[in-house]
Length: 355
Image (cartoon, rainbow, N blue to C red):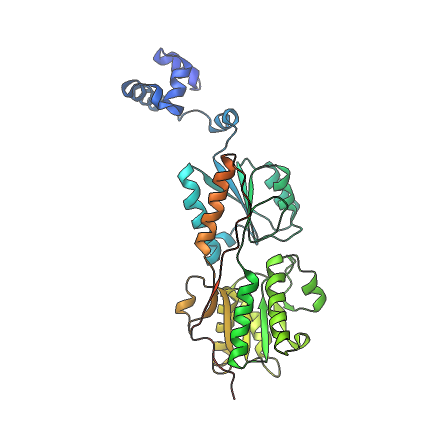
């Protein structure tokens, strides 16, 4: 056949109706096994791969894809261990309904928002984006089912979160109970502007990442209740959530006079960076400086020394988000579930302050 093969030309070649050929791909239960096998075999001979999935999506109103909007660029979804576990849990839940994932970045650019606005997806999962991210507004404008992991809080949108305040309080109280008072903080980005360094009260107050606002506020309140002057506590913001920026932040903290005897890192990646910086500077952990993280990400239990951290159910949270997406696509009404609990896991990176 010299013309381009379509459902119609294939049907004419086989001497059957166009609907019969369509059923061979879309509703195989409507045909006998022999007839379907004959149609597919002839289609393979003629190089016909099947109906255009875009046209099928227009007819059904579904694309079979769930959009996932993530912070810090697409590569972050594959390089950050916690993001990998979230996505693993999400994908494992969605695949039971034959749904795939379509990743989009929300980095504050106009291009990101335009790509999101044009994305053909059945639903959106928003993961850890700032309050004023344009791509989130673009996703909302599509009026698709939506669920949020962590942040931002959106009216009427289910949010799968953890008790961030409880986790930050537990990490801080552990250090206080060990006797530490010279405590410093390594924070993930407060705003998506690439800033790295010591932050002041104004930047803390106007942070657009709500999770960081919550965790920092919990640390501040716990220290203040113990008589520690929050104004004297150095807080270093890291430009991205990875070990390299965590190490840079720890260099700055450990180079201070006097140096802190403990560092609260508000993510495990930053905490691992702090361990690396301490090792390179000859600072013994925990003998000279204790380090505590947040997440209980893969690998922290085998760090040198094993990291004390706040554990959260990373993969389970992705699964819960997937369950909500499936329910929303079935037309069910879903409320925000209770925040999942966290727990403190004490390992060898924390101990009493040096005498």
